[in-house]
Image 1 (cartoon, protein in one colour):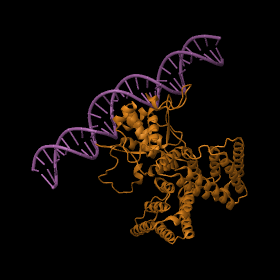
Image 2 (cartoon, each protein chain N blue to C red; image 1 turned 90 degrees about the vertical axis):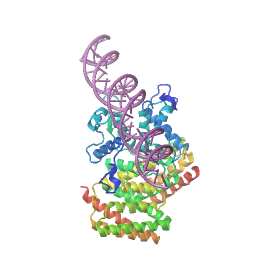
Image 3 (cartoon, chains in turn brown, yellow, blue, purple; image 1 turned 180 degrees about the horizontal axis):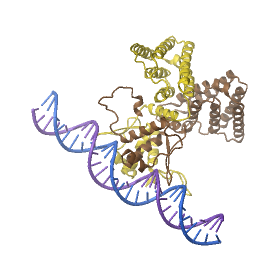
Length: 244
Length: 244
DNA sequence: AGTACCGTAAGGTCAGACCATTGACTGTTA
DNA sequence: TAACAGTCAATGGTCTGACCTTACGGTACT
């Protein structure tokens, strides 16, 4: 619950957790999720049912559900047999949250790119070490797709993002995949930059993608790091141009 | 009616974006934030006021506000002259959201630690380069606190987390701070491991923290990386013990 | 001057009603 | 029998209007 991070020992004469019944409900449900009583795919009781269990009105329950939904913990379906379903882990919401913060200029695009550079380069040792044959095949397949798109003049950021995400998966570490995925998710999309990313970009980018894939295949960490470094540095440069 | 803000030319066989008036309101307000019509510190009109402007009931407006609040875009104060205020810099919410997703997903503690290692070590070059005198003072202050806590037998993970987060801030990159913050936030807390972390741990950990701070002060990147590497590796080992 | 009180604006909650959506059941028809 | 259509019930989405709680600010009393 929210109290987790509280840190203080302000127990006696407890101040907290007055106000906001809906928040208490949110916290209770979060606990159920954390300790495994509820797992992805499960369905919460209906709103009217929850009202009775918690002894509150439907409005309150609904507000709690809205919060859980905004947090990305549940999705809500209407109709018979609808309800609130625990969502499987999805990084999209987090990405959206990042995009929101970014738009409030808490984050600059340059900062994000810098962070991205650290994570994506830092992941390379694991990738080089753990990439399987299937992984490498998949990478080259994406490179081919990218190449084709470039030839057709249809290269989009989406293609590049798919490559980077697939590359991240080669590290076989879900946490890393999630991180990199949120970097490439709605975030970059919502940033003005790279709106249709000139074909030249795509051409050069695809070339670097290919070099990366080859470096992975030959387990050449140094080469991979060098290419990735340049690759992202170029993005950084572009970003710093377009954002003010 | 709700259709006011629809925006699309969804006339023929329109599919999307029916349902959920509150979501439309959320989106509208987000737009206002994005394009700078609303800036941090501003106050939204009162709920009853928004009802009239949007032509919806208060329930709907409140749900929209709940979502915005959960997203971390506004904070809500009660009482006279209360209301919804655009929040300024609050990376906490996003971090919390990240932690939520992480904690309920298939992530193992080991994976998270591995990712943490990459990010925290990767950030060191920036930290060594950019840390100011104030930063370094703050680090040593935290080390002292930790030392004191160890002496009193009161060392907690919280103290360690504070050091790591402050260290992250030395990179002067908000995105990085956010990432590392979410690693050390409610996530590790809610993960079983390190529940009360034996004093021995604290002692050794504090020592390493001091070494880190000293390495930063003398701008010795290699040393910092070595210490951090060991520091986190030890955590990794402990984690892999305690989680099945 | 300081304190205590009260009014008011705002969010928080409640109760009950109605609409919209959707899947399942049932009955009719070819 | 199989396919279609109509009905029904469960469930989320919204509305109305009322009341409570909180907290700031002003006023009156000491």
